[in-house]
Length: 344
Image 1: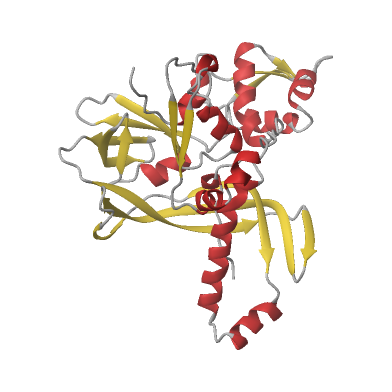
Image 2: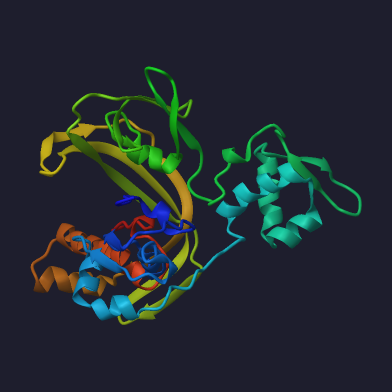
């Protein structure tokens, strides 16, 4: 064995003897992952070397300029919320497939919020109530006992799955969640499967299915452009720092891929302009953190620096992007898990 090239999937639970060096391309998102990846070489107390190659990412550049910050930082605390609704909506049907759940068991095992989620799953037809009386209260079972636990996303991530098939054979290549389908599986997108580039030929949104072809000599990848809107549902916390007010609470996000661009490999040059995409918006609820600039600050920027509202909005958007990029400094979170928007 001379070398192993891998994604981050190799960083946990794999012991490959005989590796003397680890080459890490880009900051993996957390200090814990960095050291896990570094530990793939030098097993059994053998000497080894780890080389970190930074990218143009803001966080990578920060660590390249402050290497001691990278080497001396302790592991991030892992923060879990087992009572999060998105997690419960997938875990509870899997538990109900194994054994019918009573009201008391639901509250005891899944927390105080779980009863509300169970009742919602019952209304949606995923769980069925076999009893609503007696000492145990309601008894819930899986509506379709023949369904596979694989139908549910145990990580609590984004919604229904899309099936990706090879058009010529109808062979299933992969399954992706609905949120990523909008970004990766629109018509004309290049989808990478096991190091092979496929082109999305057509998409049936109603069937949650996409057909992919494997063209010869594909020399580009695609990047989507999307628009997003955010609606505040309620405000749970609010505080003031300086002149800005910060608020935290549940929000409803709607984003839609409107076009995509073709970028050549290696040269990173655009091929043509933007190509239109017809894909329905994806709507979900999550937790939002937002800053409110006072009217006096906006008026000051407009007057003193001769800015217009569009320029101010662009500056605030850049600040949101920067915040997303540096969040992994303090939280175990990938920067791509976060998104931002400017509401005028």
